[in-house]
Length: 364
Image 1 (tube, rainbow, N blue to C red):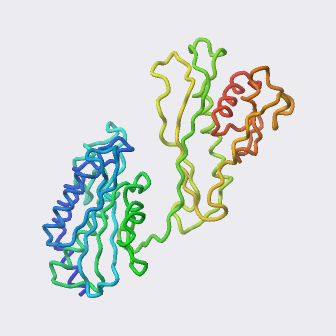
Image 2: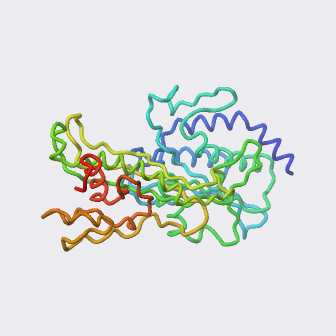
């Protein structure tokens, strides 16, 4: 049976290429990333499943007002097996990450290009290869007339790239009868060329939005303002220390260490000659095993209601009216303080304080 199925899959190579090309042409970036969502791709996949002759296809739309039609699609298809009480699930996601700066692409990201035995296009790997391999597997069984031992379940879900709230999480929370404890689940979201790698774990993830708040002013008079962008810049540099604080290695993962990467940055001011009073950037954190799951920062210290010495700044007393923007305890954010200035944190008033100290050489 194995050889028959492998031979049939090989015969489907050209169909797999065309299927991949058609999927690449459909923009399925999620709405949180300013995309149209997955509805067009779900419609294409449903028609493909119907053309295979699969009778049991169900739709589980997750309400989401941010997309046209007001819902995110989730498709579930079942191919009967000899064992009807246990399913083998192949779960893939339909959404893709944004294409980024199109000027950095050599070709249109939504127009597939075949070169050197590879197909280039946005989403070709993440996760069109999962969709294509799942569909060709099912077609190989159907075309060969072989009934699988287990019932094969295909789940094509939305929203994997931004949290799965409207995808797999929605199915589990709102339709718990779909999956059973005895089921086997394969998620073809990663692998190797020879198929010898099986992923058994993923790092925990946390996305952090960090806002620094200062005081907007004309750039020619910086001493009258507080540069929120400078504060954010200092913080980005200091966040490198997270790699040393969370340095546990686990070779189950690739890379084996935790990663902390500043990624997205929002625009602050539209013109060059204004000192920004607010700045926002984001941190992508991926934690490997070991230790507490997440403890990147403690509770922000309460704003001080007196004008005594600030913990961590024993030689400085805040001036009148500025006591609530002082230097907090280093314990509030577990970074290694530098020898020249205190480490800024995610609290806006702390980060901007670092910017003021960097500019003036003294506490704000």
